[in-house]
Image 1: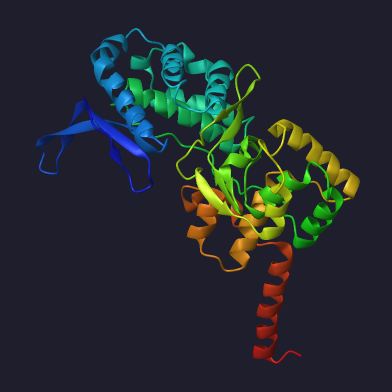
Image 2: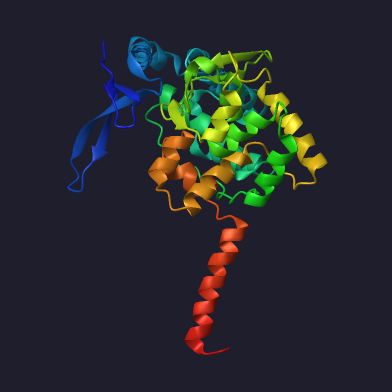
Length: 354
């Protein structure tokens, strides 16, 4: 049985031999290269190791049958099987997204046999989909196509041209927005969730799953997440990633808010928080932004204060700085104005234009 190894990130990876590819060398000779299939689990501890090894063992056991079945499998059937094999491992939200893509977004290639699928077929599907969907949504769809092909046709060298990423237009609440918001919700059920999101930062699902048994003084152990199943039920799961399991040291004024609580911090679900938050902003006369944008505020202000990215990532539960750079590291409007004023003042003095 293949053995999983622990990665520096804390995830578990297990590799199993898939097939051999012939590589043509510069001198014209052919070299055979062994190709391995990798299976990764972000679940921490021995459980994550077992999950990775289970996926690898399942692939190894079914490798030959997969090979024989490729000529008979349509891409739609392969996608169904891929999703089914991961229902017990991936988050309910991810499975829901996969099933939605399978049902609505890959219809032109669903009936093509995996063995007959070409790069042109996939490019045509992506081009058609890109006309009515955002670049991010297109990339998500293509990500599933790529994952299915890695599983059922590992020798397929996928090289699809994808639409360029678009920088998201995100509103970053200012310090003044946060002050006015906290004044408006003071003493209400929404006060603590907002404090946990803005000064953690914690996600909606993490806040709704938080229990006082996971709090020690000012330290919150983020180890659970509330997610919605395909049937619309809310359940508690472990975080999707290794980085999501973390400890956050909150300031005293936040810790005071849970001092007398016992059990769950809130009885609200993530959807209830979202709906109430939108109404609060409207009644308080504040600009519209999402509850999730409180995380943007927290990450951005920490960045503006000069806190190293590694600490911001650890506090926010990001596994790498890719998300931080692309989404969360936004300069807030007020600090940006001050920095621009400093730069412009220097240029004025340099050129003596006063």
